[in-house]
Length: 87
Figure 1 (tube, rainbow, N blue to C red):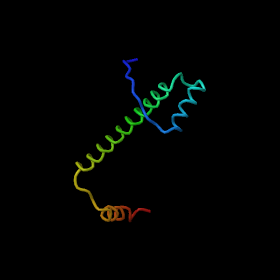
Figure 2: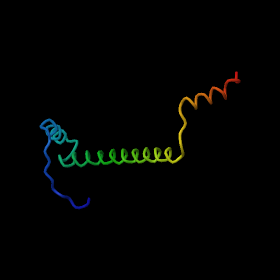
Figure 3: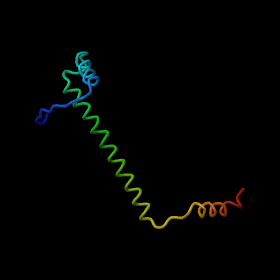
């Protein structure tokens, strides 16, 4: 494990109690272990959200770069004309 840094955090008493109960139940060796796992999960989730946001930004940019758009009325008129003779 890389070097560790001691931090002090403040949380609502119900969260603190949940941490203590989890450790007392033997699921984790310490409250620090619980917090580290929670931060790892948060980091993974945050990184996924950032990737999704970047993908969305890229899609928006691609749409803007693709040229001027068409109005919905125009698109539907073209579709109706195209498929008017089809059974």
